[in-house]
Structures are given as structure tokens and as C-alpha cells.
Length: 75
Ligand code: SF4
Image 1 (cartoon, rainbow, N blue to C red):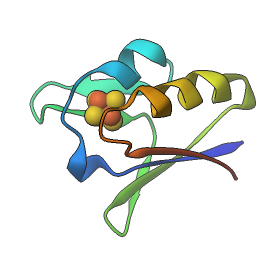
Image 2 (cartoon, rainbow, N blue to C red):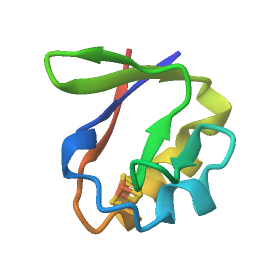
Image 3 (cartoon, protein in one colour):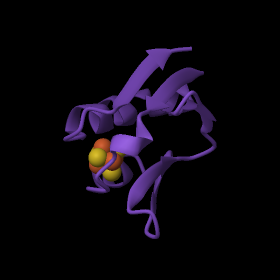
Image 4 (cartoon, helix red, strand yellow):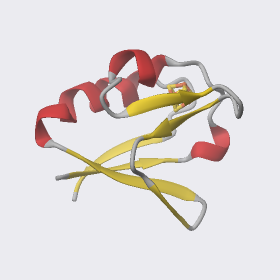
């Protein structure tokens, strides 16, 4: 599994991550911020795990994020 970290507080809800990796990201229309599916809050950051097969899409999402608040790491 690959660890993904989302600094959600800074999210501007541009939807890029959701468009690129909809298997892992959804938009919370009420809050106007994306959400990493099944992530848990840890010290103000949202931390989740994705499958290896979704790594490339999430790395693309991280590059596309205008706020640079998505980090994709080895778990
Ligand atoms: S790409 Fe970045 S700013 Fe845009 S919705 Fe996703 S996390 Fe938020």
C-alpha cells in the first residue's frame, strides 16, 4: 500500500485530483474541498492508503494540484 497525505485545510476545491483519480478522491460540495476516500485525520492532515496500481494517477493528481497539498509516499 502507498501512503497519501492531504493537507485538506488548504484545499481550494479545484477538482483536479477528483478528475484525475476518481477511484481515490471525491468532492465534498458542502465544504468545497476534496476528500481522500477512507483517509483519517492525523494532526490536521488527512492520511490514507491507496493500492500500488493507483500510484501513478495519484502522483499525477499531486502534480496537478495547484496548492501542492497532496503527497504520495511509500507506506
Ligand atoms: S487538486 Fe488540490 S486544491 Fe484541487 S481539489 Fe484536489 S487537493 Fe484540493
